[in-house]
Image (cartoon, rainbow, N blue to C red; front, side):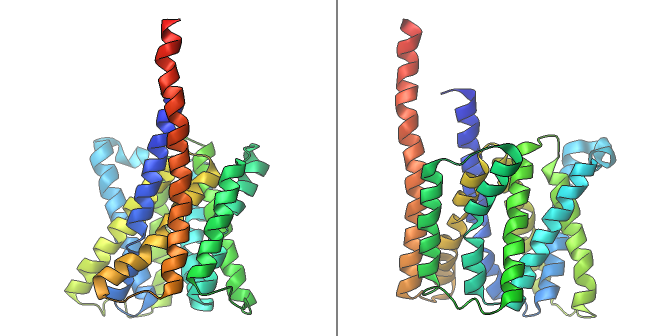
Length: 301
């Protein structure tokens, strides 16, 4: 196995791990206080704190210098923060079903941006699998919604494009420290949430604060870090495709945690998404075996 293939497999594992972590967001949201902007503030603030503590441990005395970003790094930070904010805004403005379907187009949107910016074309298998996964999302939400809320749908599309752009940036510019980008973007989101939460930020119990701190440390800090470092090693469209595992796993954890049995459509659609991504990953592993077997034979010639 060559170095490029090892890096690709490592990237796939990191992205799959990030999807697994993100898939628990539904459980956290069910346990969190009902005020969405209070949740958003504490989630972002605790995620930023976790990332800054990690950088302090990693850099020791050089942490202040490590926290600096280039102009492109600051641009990536703004894109990351905007993606977080537009996600929450989309959920406010339109239905979860419509947001899920628009977000499921991310592999195709990412492929288009990567092609235009990097000249990196997705493989036909990635595009075909992405279409099957999109079909699975449509089945999950019980058919295509009306898409009659143009503002909400436009915000959901903006969120999808922003996240796709962030994937391409992570793939293209390895000089940008994505840990610093994540920490600064989470800080910006927390600051933006303060006026939206009004004076309600302290109207939470100690138990809720502990829950929100764990929510931020996992889904804002850990998941983003895993995903963006993995995205450096995997073609952009494939990164976005693997991330769709989040959509198929989320209902399972809610089912197990709260005994809320998903409907037949949710189970069928989730199975379609999961099997589509799994078949793509299995095809990669099977394709790698002949190359690995051929390497020793070539060495004996």
